[in-house]
Image 1 (cartoon, rainbow, N blue to C red):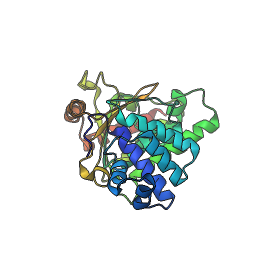
Image 2 (cartoon, rainbow, N blue to C red):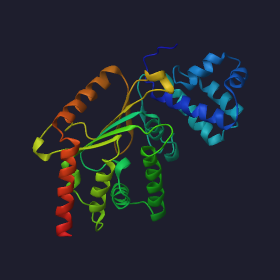
Image 3 (cartoon, rainbow, N blue to C red):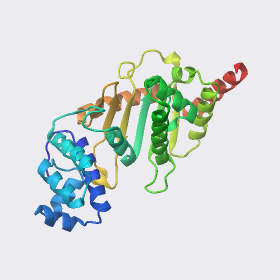
Length: 295
């Protein structure tokens, strides 16, 4: 098996999409291998994200699967990143919104750890709060475009209540300031706080608050980040974790051992400083009662 030191993130995602295209076309691994004139093992390794993939092989497979031309172009572009030592995924260029890499990784993860210093994470956003965050982030969007983004977020939230595969474990640490920064929409923050309390009742979801009293901490300079852990299906349980960090112009994906070690250390420090889930629930209820009094 190839042990190239480059980032495995684009390989894993390319493999997932190629498998989806093969299954959608009703083709078998054996048929794909025959078409590519290679071994069945090579197709398995490609679909598991274990090896870099040549652009010519991706085009040949897409042609065999009758993949749409625009999707073929995106997959071919992604294949070029499978040989990279590290990479930067830029939104709005090679990969369109509907093909956002992170969404696929999020759906495949078995454990998701998120730190948010300023807003409630998208997977736990209520409708009115979600709309306010989208408009604040991209005020140029039309009403239809805002509605489209709301639907996408709501579809992503479905992974928390899905039956198969089992929903991932979601662990959220949110800075207390995010609970105090209410949007201008009347009642939006009250709805959001109630939504957080309901989310915390799910057995696989944990919402914890980092109090303002903590002061500067290890994540003060990192900004928001997500750690995605994988198991089962792809990678047979040993697929490396991925750290995702988003900015205004792109998203950084990190999966090198030393990078993961740093973020694991930051997460451990946050988990030690944050309130317990029970105490966080009490704080959220107090904030909700305070807002209701002054509403």
